[in-house]
Length: 142
Image (cartoon, rainbow, N blue to C red):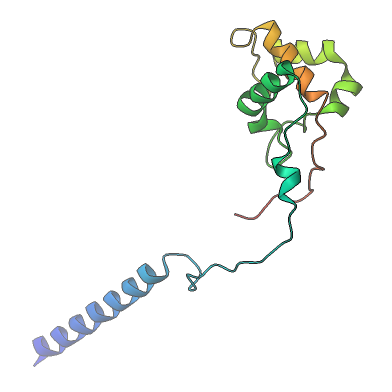
């Protein structure tokens, strides 16, 4: 009789465990709705599709900034570097920017061995045309 009671308790525990695991797997840590909410926002695609009025050097600089700088300097509060653009070049000066890119700092690597001086000039030429969006004060939720 005692063995039968233990068997029933064990079976009940396994059944509850399977039900809990199935529910956890079904939710998978996500919201229960699998249908995303879509919100229409008017957007002028003509502005987006208009060709950029940049010189060849500025276009090359834009690519360099996107590949080498934006990871830390794109304006997200979680990114360590200040947003780069026209204002920082005007405030600090081109010589400061060149030196910072070449030698780096305690938080920023130097690029003296990976970027040629003309590439740094192209990046600065692009930055002089760009005004980054204002940095938000709160970090986005994960």
